[in-house]
Image (cartoon, rainbow, N blue to C red; front, side, top):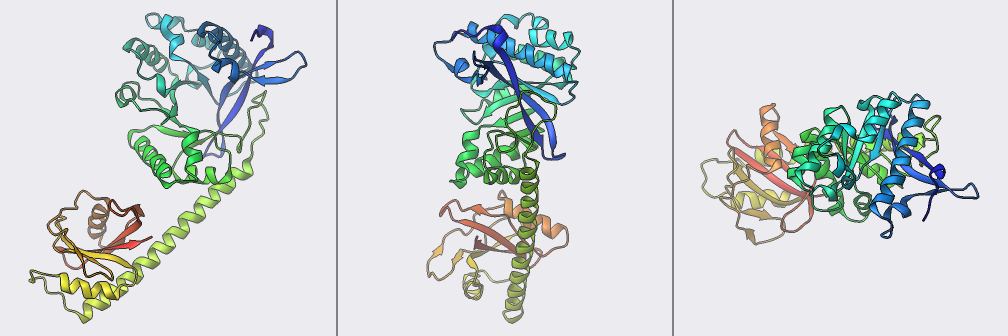
Length: 389
């Protein structure tokens, strides 16, 4: 496809930030104008296997220069996302100061701190020379975004070398998260990892209210997609679906409040049942075998899936007593100090609380969604109750 240079333009898709509910950045997207004056995406051109890398580079340069010039003319202050293919950096690996994007930014008086250089994850297996080129962008003040994170196997070594500021979660995972908890939990783990190492998360390709609600609940800061805002010819007076964004924030607040209320109600109900049982069935810490004692308790806890005891170091003192079953799961002497719910139990005890209720998770063996309740019977004995969610 032969595209006259004067027909190449850029559109800008807003990226919103959860903290301010305003536009954080615009992503540059390539467009061209046909002979009838209609605007079309350059995506098919860029992804056409018959299009050479040199042809793509030349057209993309036109898009980038157009976008940077417009950014300066409109006196914007938001960040600007610029897609860069690693293959284009080969000529600059030993002379990064000649990078055209940086030169154009200087020409138009744009602070390099406002540029976000976006690199696709699948290209992260590049040589150290490419890594040096990317790090030059960071050295001069640009931010680095890792695009399509999760689309292919992540190279943690490269991630550690480059230390991106932002990772963009691939839209396929967002769409799939509506159908399978596996995708949703994967997204949660990515968000937790990113938060722990100081990387911000951007969810792209958000198209429905449910997808936005899911992403909001997964702690991402930035959001992009047709539901929120479509690509636009100008950054001035951007059309943003603020209502749907505000609705998602309110939905999350409602969900969190409801979760807190239900969790506390369930915890207090279990506290009452446990304390009533202990009052009528004296616990003898000198016993060697607590299984019979726990079996009786399990029968009185209607919501219990199984119960067991551990010492304060996480060593299980009993079998798993399973509700309505004569079979005892042989977990005695196993250690659970590495489990998240055991940490939560210790933290509660340290803050003066006798009990706590974990967040929901999926059991290793059954895959059932459960929550674990803990109660400190004494300083050395902890009761754990698994409850189906």
